[in-house]
Image (cartoon, rainbow, N blue to C red; front, side, top):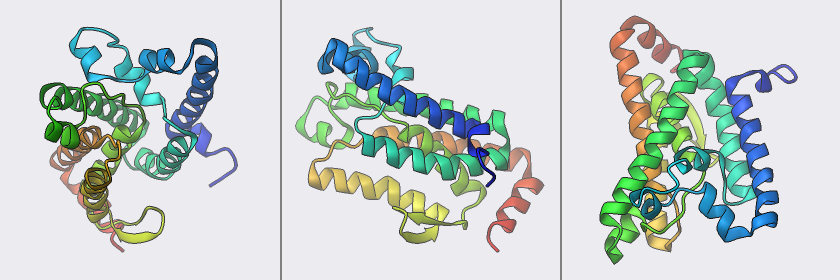
Length: 223
């Protein structure tokens, strides 16, 4: 990749936006305090069900809970996003990313708001009073798309374990869910699922609309 080529892409621009948003949020926390700042930008099902903070469906997509959270998501976006953008074009890439991220938030809010009021429900789908931030839902949409268009594409899960794309997405989806249940970690599993659904759906739409092109793509990336 040529110097600065990444940052001429939509994926690169999204990375820049996410990084700027993260450090701007750190400054914002220092000004108004952590709790208030989080309530203004993070997605909380209980607030949405009360008709409040609807804008957090968007702001939460560009916020991250820690530098490590940001770093992992942006590394994933730099590899997966750039590849998807070249594969299906800038406009389609941006469409999948944004719709995937928004639907991820919508599914998280819906399931946590409806079923998260019990102990079991909270463990499985999340608490209605939990905050959610991050680009993971949008990134899962890109991964779901690749699982359909390039199912046998070899990828490195957790950057170290090689496996085909379709298996990788299943492992990430259900593996992270199992880990969060077992260890009680606050991972946005239903948000990941929402993004994955959008990616899979759009992938199958493209396969139906462009059967010859998508078949060629699948074959090319299994060599």
